[in-house]
Image (cartoon, rainbow, N blue to C red; front, side, top):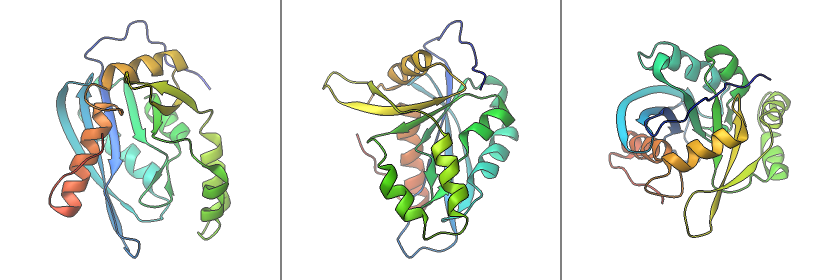
Length: 201
């Protein structure tokens, strides 16, 4: 797969961070998917919202639609997503997102995904083999230390070189272990569902 060349990574690089809202185990129906536009890790420039089905198969299409209709698309340089499963096991095909939008994707995880557990959980869902194929195709996982405490998060870069992805992740992790675009997307998505935001450091 081709990669986007970053000749220079500016402190104000425009990043879209995407996360979903919380839901109860017995929840049926829609879950909010929130995107926030940040310049680096310091300035919030915009918010976009769509909805996806819990345990559905529509997150890839909904995210592409949200991006394509956004006035921010032409200015965005990187998309960051909190894992590849949203609203339960609605699996994001990050490679298709890159092909359709030309926007490189950095998948962020707080912990190394336990693939055996994921595969076991998927087997209870329709089209589980397709979901598993998408997850496996996302790519290699790399650790990135973003803060001085010696803790790392984990990334899967798609359409972007590992070194460039690491630099952007570190640059945008200004207030917590995770990049600010994802932290704020989580806060907003939580407030939409619960009426009040709360977050993780």
